[in-house]
Image (cartoon, rainbow, N blue to C red; front, side):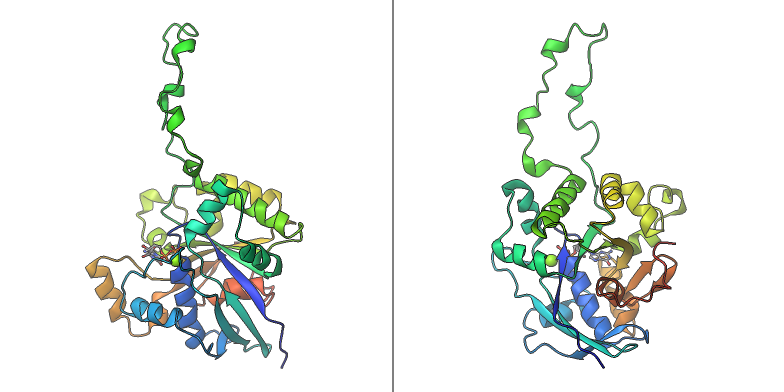
Amino acid sequence: MSTTPESTILLVGLSGTGKTNFLVGLDVILDDQTDPDGLKHSEFASDRAYLQPLREQWLRGEELDHTSRQIPPPPHQLFVVHQASGTRTAFHVPDLAGESFDSQFVTRSFPNEFGGRIQQSAGIILFLHCDHDADHALHEHPTFADASPCGGVALASATPANATDWRLEDASKQVKLVDLLQFMAETRAHSPLRVAIVISAWDLVVGAIPALEHEMPKDPARFLAKRWPLLTQFIEGNSEGFPSRIFGVSARGGGSTPEEIARLTMITHPRERILIVDGTERSNDLTRPVRWLLGLLKPSAMPNA
Ligand SMILES: Nc1nc2c(ncn2[C@@H]2O[C@H](COP(=O)(O)OP(=O)(O)O)[C@@H](O)[C@H]2O)c(=O)[nH]1
Ligand SMILES: [Mg+2]
């Protein structure tokens, strides 16, 4: 049995992208792992003051409390064993509020502590919510269009009325994320950063009507390429600096209407609420992205085939 040094895995994503639900779902799976190649809890962290109440909310099907930016939760520590190889490891998973990542775009800085974590981390899990728009709504400022029927004459008066209303924080989500990745690469002095991309609330994609298949492809890599093209091109064009793998994840298992909550709480084994799609593999083993980041995922499992 080997023990690897403690690592840090960062959960990165803008607000409301499924980070906290993932952390809780991961904790549930670590307790009830059915994949012989998956990770399991080897022991509990002595301090579960952050995770335990959230887990209880999750089990009751409730919406989880919003992660506070003012009082950042302590980085949660997980002790795991990889049953197949006998490797034991521990890692810190800080669950930061999405606003911390939003504000990086505006202030052009990270808290020092976060910079240190980026340098040490084994990799990041980058979260996108399947229902969020990567871009601005098109034609948000239609005054940019040439309104003059006779061409050119009206150019001087075509100053967009709303241009001054635009603020840096209004930049599109995929621009913010590409900027964030560039910041992280610089912080790490350009040593490669493994990025597990998680598209969350995947149950919504699975349940989408066939007519939406073109807009919401059911393969996570195709979904990313379709809905987040700038981010996809950035990651693909910089694959040496950002080795990546794409996952579709339903960590909560469904919505938050009373009917959905009733359905979720009736499921006998809570782990069965969870779905992860990794290429052609479907399971509820949320440790897959973590295993990939730690180099413990079998190479035979081809990504996004
Ligand atoms: N349908 C569905 N919604 C989810 C899932 N995971 C998270 N959500 C919703 O996405 C929103 C943000 O989730 P949360 O984990 O708090 O995101 P965070 O702000 O990144 O920590 C909440 O309204 C969740 O209910 C899921 O698996 N399925
Ligand atoms: Mg959160």
